Structure formats: C-alpha cells, structure tokens
Image 1 (tube, helix red, strand yellow):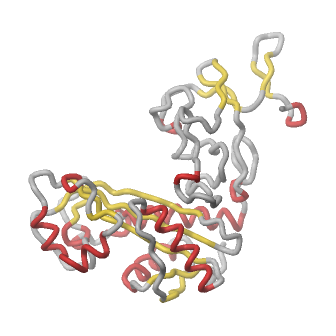
Image 2: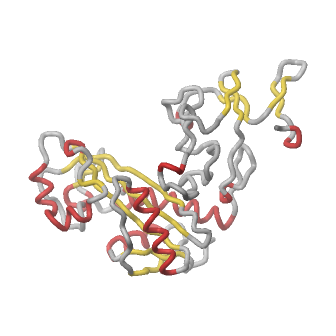
Image 3: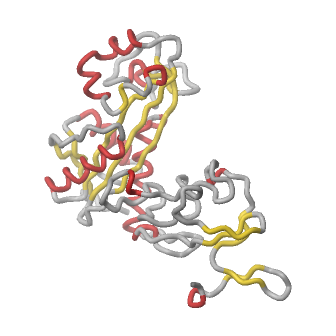
Length: 294
C-alpha cells in the first residue's frame, strides 16, 4: 500500500482538501495539505488548466502532488461557467446562476485531478456527473452544491448524505488512487504484458470479427494524443497510463477500430486475437512469439 504522507494536495481551498482527504483515505492514501496559490492559465479546457497547475505546484513543493480543478457546465448557457466557475461563483454566486437559467436546466459537473511527481510528466483523471440545476437554492453546502441535482436524484449535492460517492470529484480521485497504487505495486496489461505505469504502448494489431485491424494514431482509431491537451509535454492517459501510444485494452478512452464512433470497451465487437499473428495449417490464429513480431 502507499506510504502515508507521499502525496500533497495543492490548493487554497480547504473545502476541496477535506473532501479529497476523506475520499482518498478509503484507498489507504493519506493526503497532506499544501496551501498555495497556483498560476492558472486562461483556457476553455479544464485538462490544460489542471496540467499546468500541477506542474506549477510541483515546482513549488518538489514532492508528489495533486491538484483538482472542476467546473459546472450548463447546457442552455453553452457550457458557461465551465472553467471559469470559481470566478463566476465569487462574482454572482448561486443566485446569479439561477437568474440566468431558462427552461432547459440540464448541466454537468466535471472534475479533473492532475498528478505530478519528479518525472514532471503530469497525469490527469477526468470525470463527469450529469444532472440539472435546481429551481432554487436547496441545502447548505459550498460552491454550486446547493443548486446541482445529480441524475436520478431528487436532492442537490448539498442535501445528499452520501454526496462523495456520487460526485465528480470522487470519480476522478478514485481513478487517481488506482493509478497511484498501481504505480507503486506495478500494473501489467493483461493483453500485452507491458507495465502500464511506465507509459508503454499496447499491442497494435487486433482481430475483430475475424478481420485484422491496426490500432494506430489515426483519427479513426483515436488513441490518446496528448498534443492537444498539453503541447510539447508527454502526458499519460489518465485511465491506462500510455504516453503517446496505443491504449491498453480495457481503457475507456480508445474508440473501436472497426466502429470509430463507439467506445471500444462498450462496443459489441467480438475480439478474437491481439498481437501479430500467423494462421496455422488448420486455419487457427496463432500469436507470434515476441522475438518474431515486427
């Protein structure tokens, strides 16, 4: 299990820290508070903002550190306030948001956890919770909790006793916890055998419904390309850990090579084989030994 004091939480927001500390304690990770103000770039992408803040935080503390950035994205307001949620809350508050909402109250909370250590290759973990904006302020809580009702619930975040289990922050921190524990204990891919904590790529060849497909960096197959997240930096996939390569099987980011509009792990394709292969005399696919693979 992780050592008890290896990870800092960089923020000026004690509410976020206390919530993250409670969540990560479930996974045996003890969080310490590193109170600081971080440089925040102006961008429409929470991921870009979070990655930059994680780098800035590590430069300040020189220890493994996580930061959290989140936003409320309201459909009828074209995603506003989004990455500017903190500023908007301080400016107009929940009452101001309620005055802007029309008939369509659909919204989503999005959280990004970014982790950076001595290798200075940040990893980020993003999660979304869909729901709607309440018609009035309900319950006592911080931020937008009193006006956000998660999907399939009739109470706001502020009213829910088990908010952590449903929150966007919980889901992102859960992904981080899995990554952090795997980094210490090792996490070989079940399919290619590579250690996912080292950012290595998965096997590029796969058989789907009897046909050979190449999993590559093309737009159709859409493996994780970090250049649009943080140009010039190698940022690992937050789910499987690959850096500028082929996702490991089971990653929730990759699209199906056969049906590129579908998420690979939820596609109904029949995966028959993975890796370079040959066909035996009896017509069966046989995987080539690694030393014979190109």
